[in-house]
Length: 532
Image 1 (tube, rainbow, N blue to C red):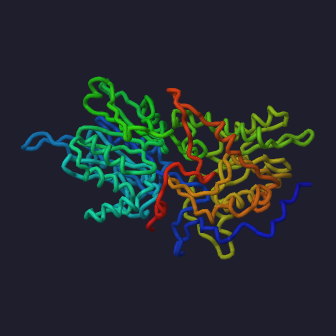
Image 2: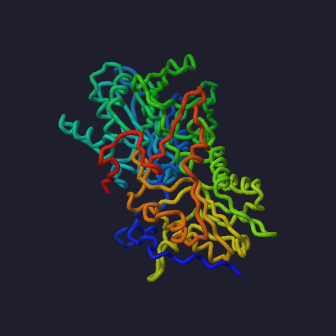
Image 3: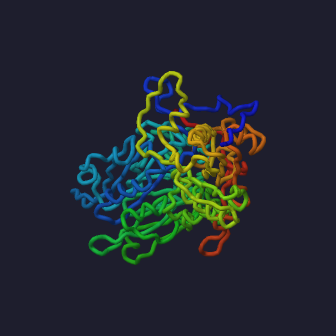
């Protein structure tokens, strides 16, 4: 007989931590985001010296759509003849929506966004009100140094202090985002050289920033001294045989347009791509601060955010995720019953490759194991209407997932997922799996319990809303979610799965603040506020 799900404890999953997770027309919370998973920050793109720069940026944004689905924008630069001679002009188009929707008019790329250089941005708001067009990047300004455009991935952690200082100096803000502060700091710098102005501005900024900057003469990329967010540098062969150059948050943006990865933009680096690069193939480089700290890469890029076909922080994401799954199986295997195999399934799509690692390692440990596709995900989730009395969480999961019942019935099932935030979706997903009548359901998570919010560009709920802070141990969490057991990956085994040195042999560290509360960069108290 199939096991009955465990009885709920005296303190059930707290209802006060549940956000509505469906957009219900006419209700006050319509359109509010489901953040039972960490939400990614943003994706940035830079293209230099390509005759169809906007088209290249458009496809690259498609590849980075997972990093931001709220809004998108492209800024281009072209040379225009004037009575005073050639002059560089910037053009921009940005709007709320997915890349496909924002640029659905073909004329935008062929007639409006002309030029040989571009920067682009996919937005998920972590500071600044979402939905407001003025908060959509790229941003640009015209100042004494000429045209200047910016795309920013990350969060500044001294936003309040910088904004107060600039306010006192009479600065007029056009947006409510932290990214605009960088523009003002550049414009106010007393340095003469433009790279020095950027360096001066970034020395005043604190926190996480990976930047693509477009000027009249160059594409400039920069990463904060800790290198928290990723940024890659590559090149693309043009139809005439010359090279175009680009930067992107992930290398999957290179693949879609046939570009090749050269290296990462290094932590604490300002990388300059200009006419000299076209002549020599070499880029100029400057440091933001003279003595950089040990890098502290965001480890969640490997766990969840980045695409498995990308390379971030100089390593293939797929390779790391498989190791996460293997390490999880080594720590928390599931034994098979006599003459029966353990059925291991993934929660599509972010845990796919980690599940392969878990299944193979569980088998190596002597437990008869079979990897199966037990959940099917719909990629076409649209508006859903809830009837009175229906459970919103349950309906959200049923719209997004369905079970392959023949795979699960009477089986000892191990569900591998990458993380749990609130636990609301996990609870509904386990209930859906139980409907297929497995004999047991065990949950394995390829990350430690999330106990703290992120200050560097991920959108997490508050500490009070995180499920790991509501229960004393894994057993209590498992009972609340309705599984026979739940096990998280330990911090030690998490760090064992990621590179500890870069390609030059230098030590590499990671930000694990969402698991440990150890924040590598100080922050002011208003860092995470969103002005919605």
